[in-house]
Image (spheres, rainbow, N blue to C red):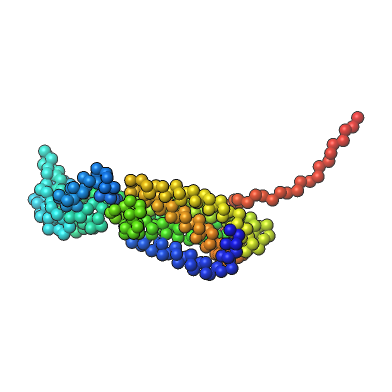
Length: 375
């Protein structure tokens, strides 16, 4: 491990460019990530739910597995006939296979219109259809009639959940990254160490996202994980993976950088400190990561698509973080920055609380007198 750290510092630009290129290649598919909710059609063919799904699809079309329910409320209507116009407009929409006549309650003031899409519940076309109906079809058809309508059902509900989570992800990411950087700045009294940690953590997570998209959404090597039908990435998975993986990556960062910082405080040079820190921590980091990778990969043996996604994402991120990032990129970048790693403007340093991970240096105690017995 010492020699690997020395090599990373002797050829920093080669290591940095090669490592970043590899991480970016792994992360590129994440740009095409479509979050949603997989349906029963993604389950193993041995499951009864999968066989039932396929039979319904074969007999009635893929949309029959995820109908949309339009609830109409005519209690305040001035023109109840607008419901009939709505049914007509719905039947004319592309992506709609059939529209059932409205079924009203005994009071006749609330009804349900069932829509069968032409595409499956998890399809992006179905998601676009729900958005289009809500925005461009239902409001004009009922304008001025006093009739109120809402589009629901399990398919629409899962679409709404995905949209809601997607809209909150940037805020979630910024909070996690910001709090982590603040804590690292307090511990290491540095501006660049927290920034480097945040960038490296995000890159490892992005690589995991990219692999998930390539396998579960694009279908690359999906047969190795028992996946015979592609679909979206589960809506809650990016958020959960980010939280777990950012914590694990930050843990590795603190473990490695604290040893480097200790060596620096002891008076070793920048290069010697990096090599010493890497040599003393890489064995433990690699062993811990190896155990976690094996455990997480075992998740892919599950019949559940969600468990497979979670396990593969965790395994990829931990492997990438413990190898490409902690063994190569961090030593190369830290060695290249040298003394700048530990730079902190005085006005910021004065405002941050004091918290140190290093053992305090022993302070010699004053020599005490030995009591003498007297008569």
